[in-house]
Length: 355
Image 1: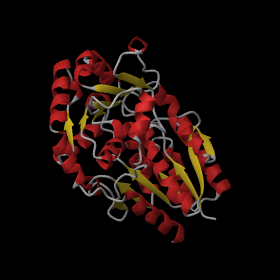
Image 2 (image 1 turned 135 degrees about the horizontal axis):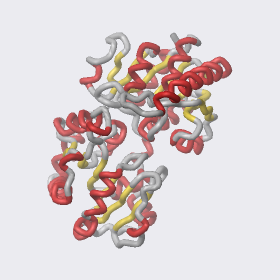
Image 3 (image 1 turned 180 degrees about the vertical axis):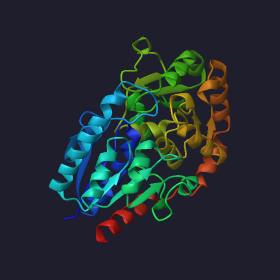
Image 4 (image 1 turned 90 degrees about the vertical axis):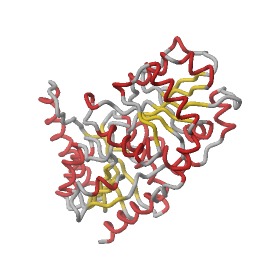
């Protein structure tokens, strides 16, 4: 039996594309194992699928000063030795990595053990974790045409991002039953990302009374980010994070307000959901979300409101503008010809196994 190790973690965006590959991998009778950090979000997202999960030590390599910069390299070294031990024990045919710092020791250990690794870069410019992994990878998958030029020519493959197929099969009636909302008022879905987005959460809550005059609001606000004072407000529901019901919520949704993580926006594109992107600011990140958002804006898929420009007035104005012009955004997304990324990636995996 063919065996594959999947890896990736730190945020949901480093895990959900792996989940999207599971049905096809099972269909092709792969024995699937997952390597992630001991207590990362990847553990709780993967375990319900009944896939053997192996934890390793994980540290983050930062571009800025932090006391953890002194301890995390030791965690990375420990993670490498744990990953190498697991790879020797499991003897996989191939590794597929979705990035995040936990994946770096797995990919490097894979090369040391002569196991081909395919990695996926979601953002327009490769993140630090993937930059460290690229020399040890056989192929590098990416989402944006611009990214191909930044990668080694013999490794780069434009695949797009694997989208969970179940997201395309939601039920509006189930969403109404789950949320208690009605079908007589348009619905805004707010996605702060699996870790939550404090600035987006606060901005939405500031204008909530105004928003609720014209819309109903489903707010996915991230772990430990619920506002108990808003429980029971008519037309507003909030959840830390949603897994199984997300497909139903999307069907009920008219427009989306979201961060601009690459996997999240690729899902919005596949679902043809008009969206307002509020990318993580360059001061709090390496600016990849801004590049992702501007690319989608150029292609006519999204409106963009940068965090520095986020006020009560700018948010309300953007929401109404997006809703009024929703048809043109839907049209642009419909004709975009979203790539069949799952098939392309599976072909790369099969090719690596058979080579």
